Image 1 (tube, rainbow, N blue to C red):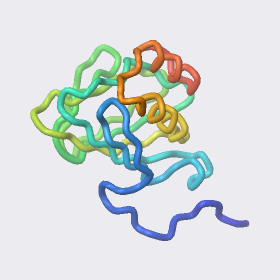
Image 2 (image 1 turned 45 degrees about the vertical axis):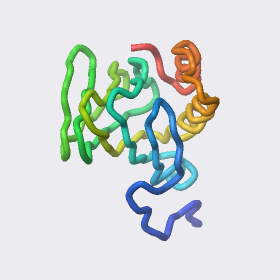
Image 3 (image 1 turned 90 degrees about the horizontal axis):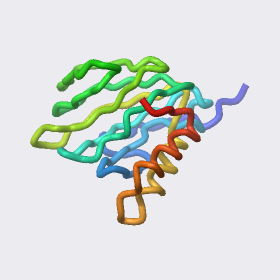
Length: 151
């Protein structure tokens, strides 16, 4: 049995498949092609005050966050939670959520999607690449194509 897309090297901090959206820099460490679609993993840098993702629910995916530095404010269903360096949050399928950085400096986190969601972030990167922020409606339409419902 062959292993498709196996990586044989370390991916350093701040490196990987680089994408940007909402002022965030996303360095993908693992993508669907490498994991057989099982998961994707990104290191995400969130500047203070950057536009947050619209509140949403993943219908086909679980999402996990591990804060590396700074503070991330999470909205999970009706709870608001602040996560600092070393904190972990699992967002089960179907849970409404969003997150952002309301602190004074950049925050960094690891974000895991299972199954993989890197194709969505590739399209989100394209949506944001014009230099102007897309409308919330355009973001929501893209999200719906990848199994995300408004939350």
